Image (tube, rainbow, N blue to C red; front, side, top):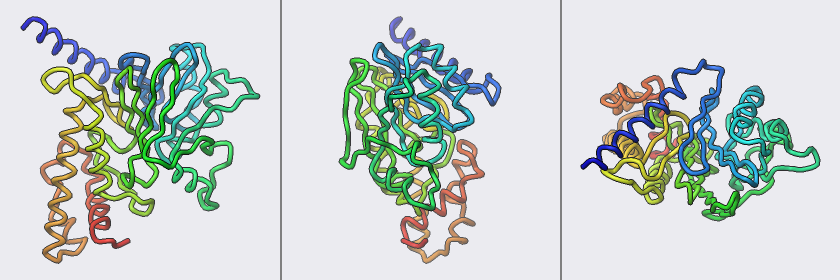
Length: 303
């Protein structure tokens, strides 16, 4: 009983520290939280960055925007004097890859070196399109096309999973196996409704499948708490129980929208029915209509 109480107290303390890292710092500062093992969570205005540090150097999951790069680099230098040698971009958004060139340089990477920048093939396809207007220095240089890619860094196995047709068609999630930490990118964002980009290959079923994939990777410690920690694209540090709650919400709203479509309701009528009504106090209600619209378009095939 005493050990169980200690475990719960430790978890509560970690949650409090995480909340402090996100809420007490000014909006333009970078919050830093040690998660477990070699992995840290950096909280930035552009979203969360996972950083694995060790004797070999630093690996980051996403680099944030170029404007934030000096502050992110300063936060990383407090963790390690080593340079960034690996980057994983979880999608093609500027918040994910905007500092792919600058951040490794600010971390002390030799100008003659290039970091390995991992992303799914669909991310490279998107950023190389003329309309994307993303300069070549930000492009991934180590893309993968299979369901997963794995490698070792700082003596730890790193597994990169393709979250197929989730928020987009190029999302990735990163599992640090020994540290037992999973960085999900925008596939999972507690406190926010999902932003499914149907025009970029995102689908509601793909998102649910990816959330279920997270649950296959994560393992709770006790009472469905702690164990594998989950660093979301935005929001607080989470564990498996948080992902279950989020997955259930997404599935229930999907089913409600599908039922309304089966009754021949138009998009405006579906929105008016407010299928997210009982979740709007828990998630950002300002994005509810966009979430419902994305589900509707995904299920009907309408653009």
